[in-house]
Image (tube, rainbow, N blue to C red; front, side, top):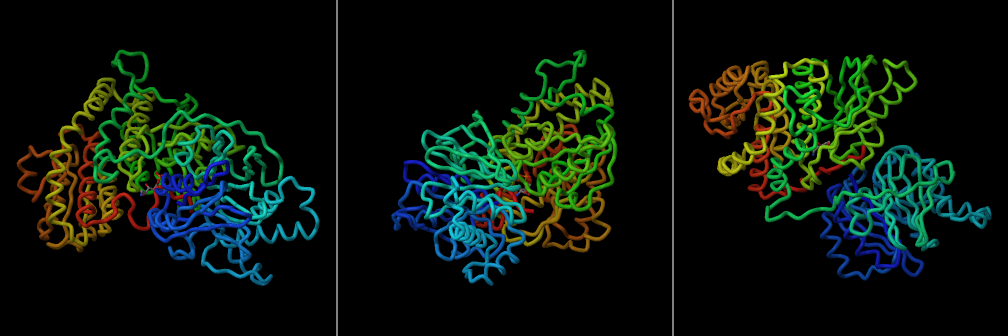
Length: 633
Ligand code: M6R
C-alpha cells in the first residue's frame, strides 16, 4: 500500500528511483512521482495513473541530481489525481516528502498550520509533513539551535514524527541539506540498503536488491539519516542506535512473465511446484508409520504444543480463507478448538483471554497492517501474565524478512516465491500447505490420528503436484469456453460445504477482485435460508462437489438451484453419472481424499476468474483500487 524509495550516492538518482518504483508498483498504482535535489532546489515530476505515465513524463524532463525520493501511490486521502501524487512539498518548496501510511491527526495539524499562514494545495494527509518540517527548521534557525546540530534536518523530522499519530513510513528531502535523506518508520515497513558509497531506502527489498543485499530494516519508532558517507539511526527520542546490516540470501526481485500473458496466469501454473516446494521443505522424505518421529519437520519448539488447548487465527482476505481451511483441519484432524478472526475486527473486539492458546497470524506479505496490529495487541495483553496465558505467536508468511517475522516467536515460510499478481493465487496454495503440515504435526504429537490414516494423508499429499499438473490444461480449456459465455454476466454464486466452503469464498473473491463481477460465496446448505431468492436463469451457480461425506448434500443443494433455473457449473471429478447429469458444465478435478480436496478445487476457480477478467480486457495483474500489500488499517 504505497511504495516509497530513496537514493543517495554518485549515480543519477532518477533512473534508480524509477526502477525501484517498478519493483514496488504492486503496492499501489494510482499515481507515481520522483523528487531530486539539484542545484539547491527541489525538482519534481509526478503523474497520475500507472508508472509508465511517469516514465513518459520523465522522458521530456531532465531530472538531474544524485539524491532523490520516489513514490507509487494507493490513494487513501484525496482522489488519485496528479496534484495529490507524492512527493509532496512544503509551501516554499524547500522540503519534499513521500509517505506510506496515514497521518490520523492530519486535520488538526493542518488547521494549526493554516492558522499560522501555511497554504495547502492537495487533499492528502501527507502534505502536513513537509510543511511541519519546514516550520521546525525555521524555528530552529530562528532560535540559533541548528548551529549546534549535526543534522538539523534529522532533528526537524524527529520533532515532527513525534507529533504524528497513525502508521507511517516517510522519506524526507530538503533543498537546504542536499546531501541528506531522512527516513522514519512507525508501523509501516521501511528498509535501508547499504551499497558502496551509496545508500537506499525502500518499502520492500526488491527495490534495492539490484544494487545491494546488505540491509537494515528500521523498527517502529526509529529514524535514520542517509548521507553519501553512511547511515545514522536514532530512536524517536533522539538516542543514537547501533544496527548491523544483514545479508539477504534470497533473490526477491520481480521476475518475468515467461511467455504467459499475465503474472497471475503464470502464478496459477506455478502451483504444482509450490506444493512440491512445501513438501520438500516440511515432509520427512523417508517417513513411514514406523518412524520414531513426526512425518513433518517444522521450525516449531515443543513449547508451542505443550498443553495446547486452543488456536486463534488472525488474517485478512485470501489469507483469512486459508485460515478457515486451517480451522477445519486443526479441529477435525488434531482435535484443537480453533477460532478464525478477521484481523481488523480482532484488534477492537478481542475474545476473552484463554489459557494455553496459540495465536497464528497468516499473511503472505507479512506487512498487512490489520494483521500486524492484531498480533501486537495480543502480544501486549498477554505479556507479563502467568505461564498459562503467556503469548505463543506463530506466523505463516511468504516473506521471511517481513515485519511479521520480527513480531512473532516463530514463522513458517510458505516457499511460494514472489507473487506479482495482486490477486493471491500461489501464496494461498502455499498457506494451505502450511496448514496441512502444521495440522499433521499436531495430530502426530497429540496422537489424534491413527498412524495408517496419517500415512494415507502423507502419501496423498505426495501425489498432489502430479495430479495438479495433469488436470490444469483440461480445466483451462473448459474455463476458456465458460469465460466466453459469462464475460458479461453480472452476478455469480459459489457454493461449497465443509472444507470446501472457504474455497467457495475464495472463488467469489477472485472473481470480484479481477473481473469486477459481483459474486457471493455461500455454504451450500445455507442457500435455502435466504440467498436462494437471488437465483434465476441469469445467475450462474458454481458448486464445489468433491466426493466425501457432504458430497450428496452438495448435489442436493445444487439441484435446488437448478430447480430455480440457475445454470450449474460443477467443480467435481467427472466420473459420477449423477453429477454429469446435474451440471450444465463440469470443471474437472482429480478424485482425491476429501480432506485434501481444497488444493485441487481452488485452481479451476482461479482460472475461471482469470479468463473472465482477461476476456473483459481488464488489467488482471493490477486490478483497480487494490494493492498487494495493505499497510494501512
Ligand atoms: O498479505 P496478506 O496475505 O496479509 O494480504 C491479505 C489480503 O489483503 C489479501 O489476501 C487480499 O485479499 C488479496 N488481494 C487477495 O487476492
